[in-house]
Amino acid sequence: MTRSRLFKKLGLALAALAVFGFSYYLGARHGRPLVHHLQAVELPEPGPVPPFRLRDALGFDFTEKDFIGYWNFVMAGDLTEAQCRPLLDRYVLAWNLLAAHPKLQRRTRVVFLHTGAPLADDELRRRIHFHNPRFTAAQGTPQALAPLVETLGIPDREARHCDPDRSVVGLVGPRGRLLALFTGITDPKVIAKDLQYFQ
Image 1 (cartoon, one colour):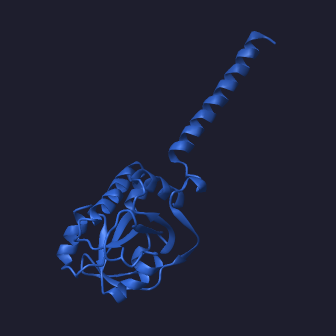
Image 2 (tube, helix red, strand yellow):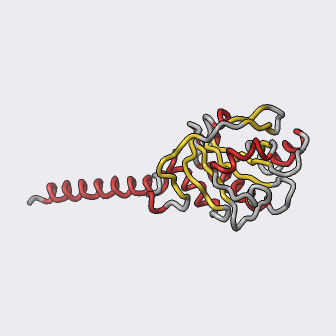
Image 3 (tube, one colour):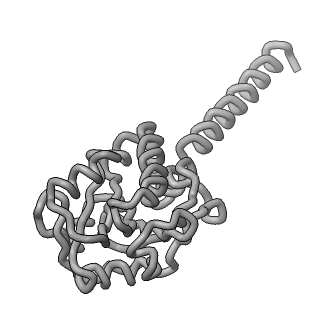
């Protein structure tokens, strides 16, 4: 084999290795996580959330149709209680981590179901926007909240108080279907990574 042919084959091998390495890097950085790497509990048969009607932080009706077009992390508790802050803070950090994926970040929000004593619209808005202006909150009577809270599998006590160790956060996708459940103690990096699997 001539020296020029040897160098040509070596060059092709190095080029193939470089392409493989770059592809692996892109896959690790931007690829969807494998199912067995998810910490979220993926529902085997995602279904639509039941009809409901609440009032949002702007004073408008908030129904199951308002989930459409967003990746919605849905949680419940009394927004006036300090115990809810650690849970919300985790999702603020997760949302911030999505800055590396701006299109996904723009379509992601938290929907906080306020189950405490009714708040004036501006107070509800102030409290949720303290965490992130892209997040929203909704409130209603226990009867109005029940269909959504029960579908998310949020325990009755958790629907009234935030317990970071026992919280359940539902992921409702842009088609209005409940896709997965997270625990309240899931690491923000994991939340952001798991969300990329579902998109």
